Length: 468
Ligand SMILES: [Fe+2]
Image 1 (spheres, rainbow, N blue to C red):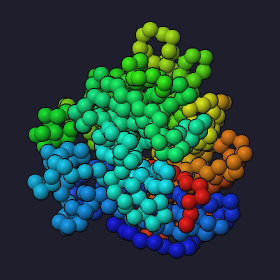
Image 2: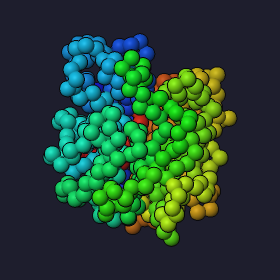
Image 3: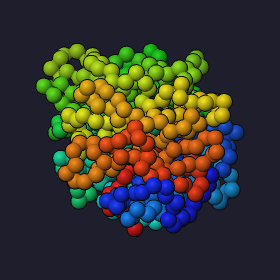
Image 4: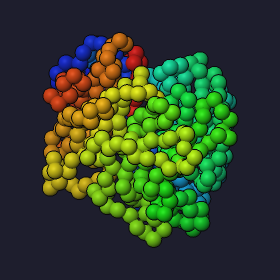
């Protein structure tokens, strides 16, 4: 799409409640130039941030590329200079080893008075929260010393502290993990370093009052394949899923590694402690969700073969063996990209808002073949009684990750609004839709027309009060 700019007062069908004031910021990969090697994966596109700014029932849209080193070099060269995903051995000879090769395309979060555009293989790029001007690579005033920064930091609702981590924290071939906690003034209050048993791939994490949990995806780091010009990331059917469990008030020497049989740990929906045990709710795929990175024999499933329902994993801290246990399955459907009420992060909770896939609702003749990022149900899951209500758009539409907007500071858990982008695949257009959680299955209370197509995005967040 390669569109940057500002559009004032988007067309709104329906009514946006006046109490919704803030910005929905989200990021999408959008390659600036055609792939240098002729083909590339979705995860390797240059990051474009969109900010839908809501004020008194009106919405303005600002959209800009993150001006990464990578984007600047490509703008000058007028072509792509970067090869395979996180594989510096395949870059153009003109790209220096010192170049920050982050695409900044995975998530955009608020830290103090900045937005941070994130890619887990490098440090963040900071942006102006209103204009989306890129301010540069940001190490949080020198306080963040690890080499990489997750795309999934979180805020602890007890303290408003900002929790973040780094894996491969001393470089792409390192086993190091570093956890950092910053107070609400942006000052570092904790730093914990420890090692994984192998070079880990840790896309998301979660926390409770006392513990940090790091799910490790069983994808190998294949250095020799990378140096030979192939993929560095390689699925391994012989590896278990590992979950690193670390005390928040420790020094990392207490790290334990729990195991589940081979499969794919998705994003973490939420985690909590109860009776000396930790429970972690996440989608668990029965095969390799990242099917574009096959195993060493070239084996990979077709995307529509992978089943990834929402499951609860128990870690018994009093047990001496390292086996984790699946204690509950909440959905038959494959789910992902869930949001919960942020006030309940790390605590017992009841409601979650995932998107899910039911292929029977689609008309593939009109919308093209299945794709790993196709979802067509916005769900409200009651985790207590395992019931699910949903809204589905049309038979040629798909959904992007939602955000949850709290109705008021004292609203009950999960009460408010859901905002998400709908891909209109038949017409190659997009809408932003707003639903009321009290009547989710009734569909949107407002549809905000996007003046151009939003590409499939990865993650985004609602930032209350940020609207001008
Ligand atoms: Fe993610």
